[in-house]
Length: 436
Image 1 (cartoon, helix red, strand yellow):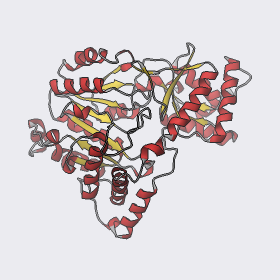
Image 2 (image 1 turned 30 degrees about the vertical axis):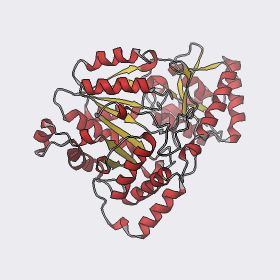
Image 3 (image 1 turned 135 degrees about the vertical axis):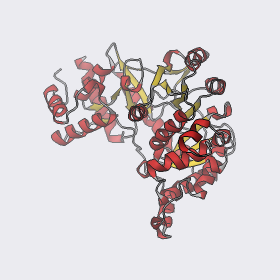
Image 4 (image 1 turned 180 degrees about the vertical axis):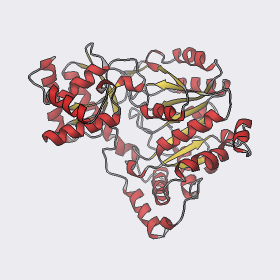
């Protein structure tokens, strides 16, 4: 292995220093710390494919609106738990503009990032019915959400959708839902980490089964409209972004500002709850909180407020301004984020050049889109082996096994790639190929 950028001894030394107990099962945060520390110790830059952070400039429209709100004194006032009216209204309008779905502004709840949104959603969904105590993940998925369930002591089950696409999804999903214990079904679309996109037919299957078995679908739209095979960037005109909301009333949509507006640092998201679910009464909620048992008001007043006390006041005005600009057709956020597709395409070409392959490569019979994430495998290497080996060549990633995937490979994020790093990646992959 004479072509390694970092020696095994050095990597092991830093692993010990950072008290990483099992590198093969390292979390995103642990890989991030390891790569950063190796860069610091050696001065040699990594190809950073580990953490999914925005790689574009934050939207200036949001920044300007936040500044204006601060100048007008909002910093001295607590934000309303349900969110400021302008953000709720613009979220409702944005959903109509790009999803063609009607959700009233009152059912659009600002949250401190989708991480806070999923955390609080898990609580209310699991407490609404004493018989439904388990969360179902359509994997692969975002590992943080399962970590949240460990904190909450909520059981979950999962399955890798790789071999259950199309019509096969119905049998697999119904076999799990018919147990009667599933409170909610969680997935991201486009998918983190695989970048697969569930089709309208698959979303219809999920929606109809959610209604049949009374499960709440938590649809994570963090990478909203980033299936660049189709231009979803024209407000109030088709094509509209695919969503389960067309096929059931049992849904919570998570809309984040982090990727579509490169606004991750401000921790701004909105939970869009269907109106029928928002106003539905549950005896279990009424009993637990000595209130009306209405899903939406219980969620806001008894759960969400206890976790974050509301989203930062000025940030809400920034997010509202960006949503408004997008719905007005003044901000083409899809055009902006399509840069990720170009980066992913170039990176895939380099990996393919040196014998790697895309693991999740199809949406049934269609090549997946190029976007924020993609998955890579190499011959018969396991997830852990490939993740560790790439570290020696200055390429950081996370193992697919940490995302609920049963496939062998790693997740690659393209967001931090810059023009000067493509030649570096080419050289390091060539070294890897020579040694393997």
